[in-house]
Image 1 (cartoon, rainbow, N blue to C red):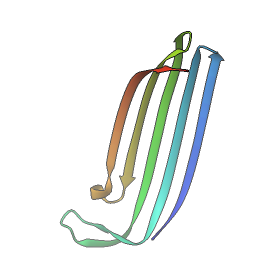
Image 2 (image 1 turned 135 degrees about the vertical axis):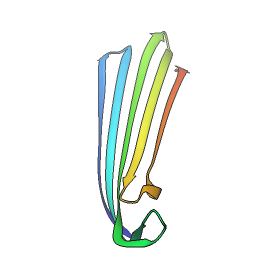
Image 3 (image 1 turned 90 degrees about the vertical axis):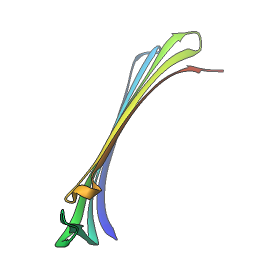
Image 4 (image 1 turned 120 degrees about the horizontal axis):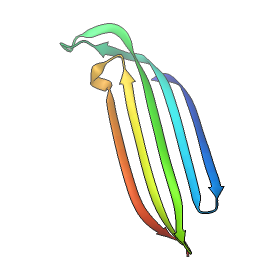
Length: 101
């Protein structure tokens, strides 16, 4: 079991109808109540596990003409902890065309 606190926020910007930009960020802090940190040798340290998870995404929609949009997306996340075995990160980027019917 764990106790956590999370913050989330997003901002959208549309300077005109041809362009839309959205940025979203979130962070979550967790304190585990029954999970101890392991040392480099795998022994229990007596410290309880604490983690911080961060996520961010960016999306850009650009109207190319008529009802066709170029869509660019990127996202990244990272998990930090007081136990190196729990730490991780990821990143992704996508591009595509959307057609509004």
